[in-house]
Amino acid sequence: MKTVCGAQTECIKAIRALMANFLSEGKPEGYTKVFPLSIPTGWGKTRVAIQSILKSAYKKSVNVVLWPQNQGHVKRVWQRPGDWMGDGKKKHFFVPHWRPLKNPVRQEDFLYEFYKKEKKEIEVNDYKEASFNPYRHIKFFSTSNRFGEFNGDTRVLRNNLGDSPIFFIIDEWHSFDLINDYREYLNGVDPSPSNAERFWRQRLLYGNCKKNSLFVLLLSATPIASAEAMDKIFDTADSFDDNADFEDECAQEAVKSDLELFNVLTQINTPNKPHKAHLVFPVVLQKRSEDLRKVQEDFKENRSFKRLKKRFPACDFADDYVRLGKRIAKSEVKFPYQREQSVFATDSIKVRCLADFIGSCVKERHLLIFCHHLDSVAKELEKKLKAALGKNSEKLEYLSNKLSASTINAYIDDFNDEKGTIRYLIVTDKFSQGIDLQKTNAWILHYELAWNPIRIIQRFGRVWRINNPGAKKEELSKPLSFYIPFTFSSEEEQINRLRRRWKTLSDVLPENDKLMKPVDFDIALGIRITPESKEI
Image (cartoon, rainbow, N blue to C red):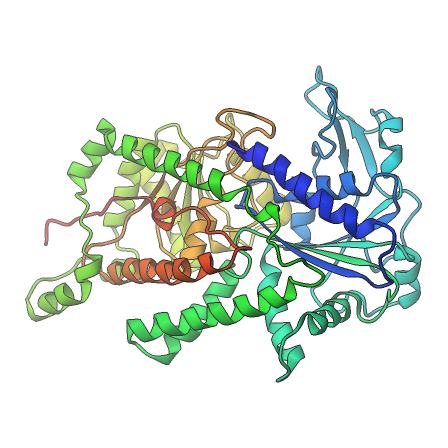
């Protein structure tokens, strides 16, 4: 359990026992079980989910239904070759073939592949079929939309799922909508496990499949504290009052309210004793967080960082922002920064700082640059930074959401390739979830900050991931993160508010044994490099 892969193994054993009990004889028709699985982003939720099901459903006929983040995520994550078997000296790989649930299933349920060590590529139809015979009765389906999937052709649904048990995997950010749906479903009625069970069966099965047993597996890095959930909670709290204490109180109450409903939704046919699966990762998370802190401290001693810091001294005035802001407002001091926050100047101080950072510290390393705004900042940043980088401009690309899916995947593959052309990739928060960019040991720079601390952590999760499944040493990447806010600007208040909001979440999350905090916010935010002007 001292490694991430060791924690994965223990987690799979614990969930396998739960699933085996779910599939055992003597359960009543329509038996329902819900289990929340909280694992840090990039630490193997997919592997844990699939392998737990395969190990518990050995030689049994079951249905596996996936509600993905989006349809593109099915191919990028859930339908890629994986060491789902994990037993024996030879590694048996296969690709689960996720069929649209609303379409009639064909006879072939999924594709199998056998991996040969002497070949770099995994070849289709090159496998030992006998190894997979025990799993031939498992059917894989994916939902094609977020609502009404089961409310279509009942005949097709019955033919697909029959009377076999259903493992329903709900991936990442749907939990916020589900909690709100449950709140509306109750409509003034007190929440209870019996109400929650009816909700799950109606919400996921639309009253069909009454005889099928249902096992709901809720996957998330921080279940109700998803980025989308926190955006809405903090936006609502912001709209009430400008007072910081009042905002924090509103946000904390909203998080607590969601946690209470989340607890009820996940306590169906569950013994009072907390399950071991929720206890295996926090110890490892704490150890790896300490490793990252050491990496950050070591880098601060790096000579190239010291030279950069001398050119662009870092000053953290977040706590005194309001007091200092009032003093500056009364003076005749002019800020060159204010305009740059919304409109790029001809010679942007911030862009120049970023270009110097790449030349001084990053060099041949890959760098993931996050913006919060789409065309107003990210698109302009690409143009200005290409000009500042000169001959290295061909190494920079902007991953716009207007690009085609094939182009986006090509950019991601190129950035993940040590020998690829793209070394500096500009992205927005649209891509703070659902992509893996750790293969080249990339670093992160927050050119713009989000207003939600979970988004900062989700950004960091793009590059803080498992390098080699099964590895015992150096199994996690060790990225560094940087941010470059203007001193005495509104970004100071943004940093201050982010830290307050993280404290709000930190105060609430430990109260629930099913939730664990992700990496510390200050690690995800990283090392500050503040551009200064001679005009100040």
